Length: 152
Image (tube, rainbow, N blue to C red; front, side):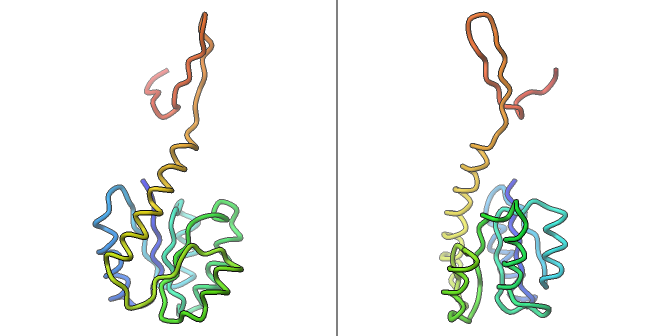
């Protein structure tokens, strides 16, 4: 299952985002209202996609993205900023390698189209990263996905 972390301090906005994302299949949605809460969730879960508000109560979404990027497993994860402050865009694209910005107010269909596109990429990557076990039999080699083995 793919995990999406929504970091938004404004409760109504966060709940709205979560409701939109719940319409997607095979996703787990995690919520945080601050950078501190988000960092705690990063330690407890594997996150595949980040939706970050730029203005958070404890520090900026840009500072949070910088901390996320310093964690090796999140170095190339998708980050989307949700903001009314479009002047942050160039800096975020250059230094933090964010994937995109969603400008408030946004349309549900625009947000979902972007997230669905990224989810397809994540699913393909996860498929490629599957672990396989090979068995050498008499005249051939059998390659089996490790998640298909039920009993040994």
